[in-house]
Length: 313
Ligand code: PSU
Ligand code: MN
Image (cartoon, rainbow, N blue to C red; front, side, top):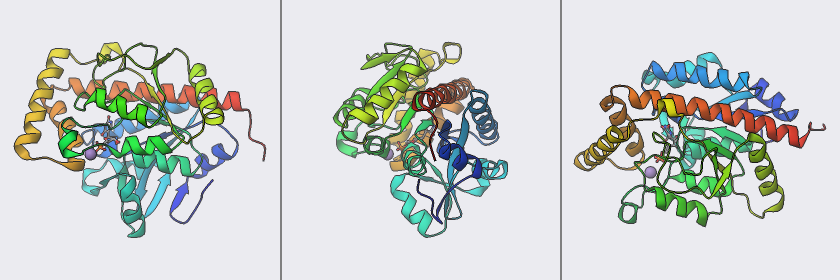
């Protein structure tokens, strides 16, 4: 486990990792930049609570004052969720500058995976993975989430990728990078707000133990350091209405063009458009799916540590 001046696991997380007990990493960009203020703090607390209820230790990750923190206190979570704290969105490539310059920011899937792995945490829950954006053939906008997953042996539990992305192209890149994609209790690859993207998932699994068996085989028998993607669909009772979703998506893509939104602002602007245009339906879906992902991730972390046995000091 790497522990340095600039990367610090909380006492609780460090002890759990040392003892081989289950830990689930959680990201902070979805709190700081994906959910509205006020709402985000409640979701942060709920995510940590469900992970504990399932027998794992939550480790929310953010960079605060030049230190990458793995496992946040209540005050630190308040800060991450406070819009006035002005935390920037940090992808993997932003970690060096923000750590070196003593700044603060919220971590995306890419940077959360990298930091989780650096302290020995191998399971991570989020909302949606970043992917290949529509029009990427000319904009070159492909999320760093894919490249980091290609080279970081972490299990990421998400609800597929947002339908605002080019989903077929994202699945192709995951194949190119040799990332196994397991759909959880479904045959379809999910699309964040919707349970079915219309594309089949490469593999289906039905239990957390099947995920654990796959992950351990992948890590021990298959050359390379790629992660594993577990695609867990949004619960049916909070899935968005497809017509509303399709209308908001069309409008959102027009909005990006008319305002010339680019780079790391694309995902937050689209999410905000969904939240304000759906009368709260997208928020209910977003919260429901991310909580469900935290539950499944906790079950997977428990199953992996049961199969691995206790760590001998
Ligand atoms: N999923 C959510 N809300 C979010 C994101 C994912 O439910 O805000 C964030 C994640 O942090 C993901 C990022 O890593 O969006 C992808 O951004 P980009 O496309 O700029 O790489
Ligand atoms: Mn991008």
